[in-house]
Amino acid sequence: MRQAVMVSPGRIELGDVDRPRCLPDQALVRIRRIGICGSDVHVYHGTHPLTDYPVVQGHEFSGELIEVGSAVDNPQLSVGRKVTCETQVTCGRCRPCRTGRYHVCDELKVRGFQTSGVAQEVAALPADKLISLPDGFSFDEGALMEPAAVGVHATARAGIDTGTIVVVVGAGPIGMMVALAAKARGARRVLVSEPSEARRRIAEQLGIDEVVDPREEPLGQAVRSRLGEAPDVIVECVGTQASLSAAFEAAGKGIRLVAVGVYPEQPRVDMVRVVEWELDLVGSMMYRREDWRQAVRWVDEGRMNVAPLVTHHYPFADYLAAYRWLDDHADQAMKVMIDVDR
Image 1 (tube, rainbow, N blue to C red):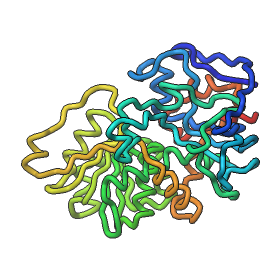
Image 2 (image 1 turned 90 degrees about the vertical axis):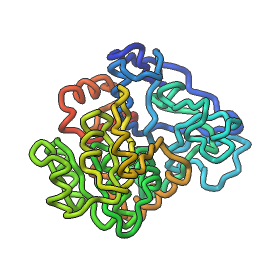
Image 3 (image 1 turned 120 degrees about the vertical axis):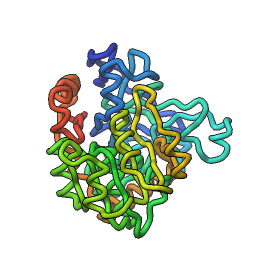
């Protein structure tokens, strides 16, 4: 079977490897879609601090079950079922694992980064980590459940519920998932700030209440003019000093500021304002199983319309070309999918 390996930054080699065996507690999944995310791009550029080479990427994905291990007793896992899978490999022994916060395990490994991902035609995966998908899901939607779970988890950390006013900094795939999850939770108004015209159009298409260009309308000014009052929550989804500073500038006293973006460099934080304005500064890291299940339910119910976030497809043989295209057209893309089945 075909497998794609990133052997060094900017270099992917496709080769043939043996199809994996299915152990009793595993299932074999024919991989159909793989999404490329911002962290994957960091690996491509050689700037991801926690990834060594060579590495098999692929952590946002969907596929179909083709074999189920003899020890697996789960009626939802039958041959032909569409599935995706939790990405974390955890120790089960540390305090976070023992207290149900395994997503911040002391020995956390993530598929496609510190351990092998699924950039191959068939993958053997632990059956207890699989997420069963509704029959009506497309493979694109299935592969979007990983970033959707990020948005669900972040909005839970933010305490968003009916009546909340939310500002989201950045309308990339994660920012849009946060905005959509906020709407699904009943947020009264959601404002998204994003410089890319293409991404702003998608945000408007998906019914976000206010969509602004920070180059034309700085975030603090937009909050005052568009919302007329301070938001309850600001969610930062970019991971740069500029975006974090803009979030602080837009904050009102006593609000919650949630950091979701991945920061390649340690940012400066205005701790004087955190203290004097009694801001709640919260981090949000990945997801737990209940976040995946909530994401699947909301998409299945039509409360999160994620399909328009897929903007481009590349066949498996053109994996490297997808990265090169992203380098040249990052502001035009939302989610690029690798079609493993073609």
